[in-house]
Length: 581
Ligand SMILES: Nc1ncnc2c1ncn2[C@@H]1O[C@H](COP(=O)(O)OP(=O)(O)OP(=O)(O)O)[C@@H](O)[C@H]1O
Image (cartoon, rainbow, N blue to C red):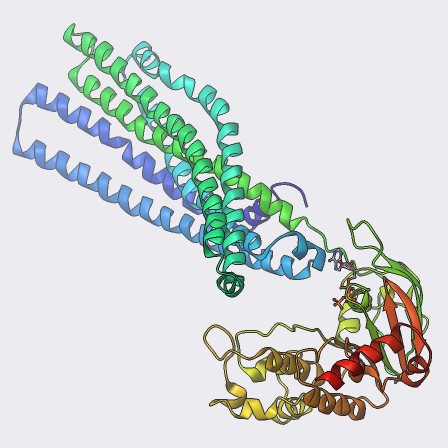
């Protein structure tokens, strides 16, 4: 995506509304600049003919008409531009969210949730401010500026007097080019420190229970205060430069006014300029000061939001690591074997390989058990099967079809994946279980809950399956969460099911009941069970034992436990543990 794309795309859609708003601003500014002219004429009429009630009435009504028309037009223009800004905010936030959901796991391990929240909230607001408030003020300031200058030129005030009065204003472009880049750089730093603070807050809140248990609140407070302090420092640096910038522009306006009063006053006293022209000139210069001040603020805001815009564009140009090939098609997994051939894999940026030369054939309907020490590569192998990370070409095949030639939707919709700590959403238990298909009838949800041995616990809650989880609902125990997540996997009845250490938090009796259910309900359907406890996988058709990213042993429970090796020693240790228990 090209730089500035997000805004260009938006402006392309919204330009007719902008055009209407700008035209209204132009009209309101043109009306406004008649004010000094009318006052000038009023002064001359007063001087020539004296004060009369007719004159006062005539000019008062004229000024009222000017004021009222200006207010109505400016108000509608402002509303339109604010409306456009809010629309930008809504569209951009939805666009960002949709884009984020398409990105790969690696992106999320690089960018914390807090940081992403900050982009979605602070950066989008920053850009919105400049395209609503910024455009609003630019439109009114620029049109007012030109309208005032045009009126001045046609006012009959001598040209040399006008030219001398506006000399200080000619310095403005020079000041803008000096200050603009500095403001932008400093704004970038402010936004970055805001993102760091949000990230830190998110992490501190997430880990508050651990913090309290270790009684390290003061350390955590200290860490958070450091990020807040950083924001303050960066903001002060920004405020310092932007305050100077914003003050200089009205100062130049004031200089113009001083020249107009002194030179114009001198000419009036000498009879070379009428009193009306003198009044009009000072009012015109005074009127110029408002747009100049506004332009200063706008440039300031624009420079700040350019930093945000750059970051939003960078985010939107992030591409997912997993790209679907043009030739990808859906594939029915029913009756298909899985061939893993010479699969080696290294995480992006990691030093060593997580998997090395894995070879495995899984026939349709088989149950495969996988054990191995922590960090031996079990979950990595599952992630590659789900294509969360990309396996090298030709290393994972479903019959003859490479995993890369299957659409992601088809692949993932046919795998029921249950991780160790399945995330549960803050909705009802029913919605959480029927996550893959919200339309599933209650019977099916209840049946899956029974299979996952969580039915009784759910029925004990006051609202049963409608019980809300999370912040505003009940808190489940670790084992209950795991079984709810299991039920979510079971209801899918997928052709391939992966249980990735999914019963680690349940007691041995419940685990046996769950594994018996898995055996009967998954008959004829391919199932992969990753576990640390032998009891969870001993009935598998094939068991593989992983060690440091390789397959160290393979066979049935009977075969493996009968010969010396990793599996037999694991069995011995666990049996000893159970006997001690
Ligand atoms: N996102 C990642 N980026 C870099 N390295 C990773 C990433 N995820 C895992 N690893 C590394 O890959 C190796 C295998 O990890 P993996 O999670 O597959 O092990 P595991 O056998 O599932 O462990 P456990 O039994 O503890 O779940 C480990 O050395 C781990 O540090």
